[in-house]
Figure 1 (tube, one colour):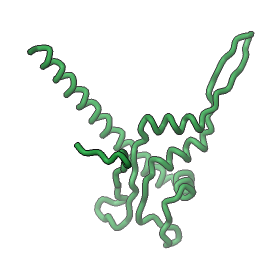
Figure 2 (cartoon, one colour; figure 1 turned 180 degrees about the vertical axis):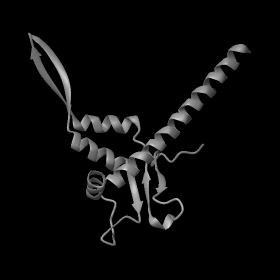
Figure 3 (cartoon, rainbow, N blue to C red; figure 1 turned 90 degrees about the vertical axis):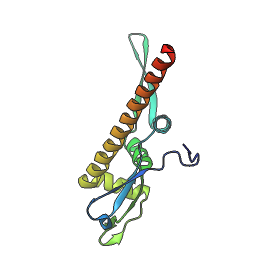
Figure 4 (cartoon, helix red, strand yellow; figure 1 turned 45 degrees about the vertical axis):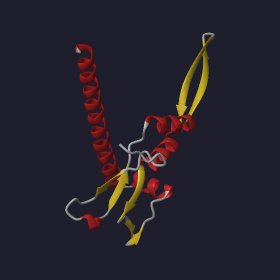
Length: 141
């Protein structure tokens, strides 16, 4: 299998209407662990409280910034998205406006990200099953 090391996670395009692709689409990708860790490092702040002489650390997250960074990563591109009949560019600001203000768009994105997550989980399960059967074959020989 060949990998493009410049773009390891290019995204998958989902059409708003499977029967009529001209109605537009959005290209999404699942946020991998390394990227999620990077976003958390930027948006999480470690705070310290002292109670009864004991130090307690906890994290406080800038939820708005976290959401914006996550949306920016997971929404790769779109086509056919318009505002007042004018094409809407796929920018950070427009992603924020649609995800924060359009329940339909946010729901569509969430549903399709869930589909991608299920596909990834199935792949991981199949990979684990294949690895386990390979290990069993090796130990039986």
